[in-house]
Length: 140
Ligand code: 5GP
Ligand code: ZN
Image (cartoon, rainbow, N blue to C red):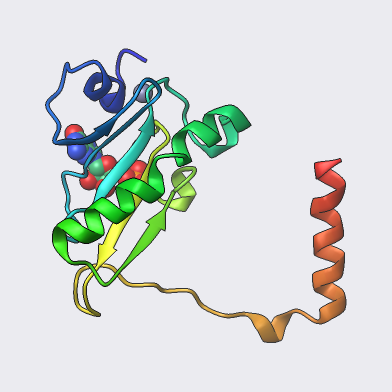
């Protein structure tokens, strides 16, 4: 896409700090560096988000992720890592070229926080079975 900043990074029309590249995948440092080493992994071919991704692209994009994650962990002595992928504006996506965030973690004040809110008490076991069946029906 001609107006996509990540396509421009893929085609070297915009600068980036690359950490990994193969035929299908590019990984480069996120400009915001939420934590030190914060990296984005993208398919070279433009797709907006996960909902457009086919399984072959998913395999190719995720295949180098463990190696990249270990390289970041070793380079900066990270204690852990969060993987994050925002899909759709309502989910916080700002750049509409699929990207997986690799966010190395150092301590509880490093710039990233897990903010899951449990609603476990709102759903009975029967509710969960019904919801799982609804998704299974869509997978058939
Ligand atoms: P999103 O909110 O869409 O999941 O994340 C978009 C990410 O892209 C943000 O973390 C932002 O810092 C990063 N970003 C936006 N523009 C650029 C850029 O020009 N270069 C790099 N390296 N990262 C960018
Ligand atoms: Zn793009």
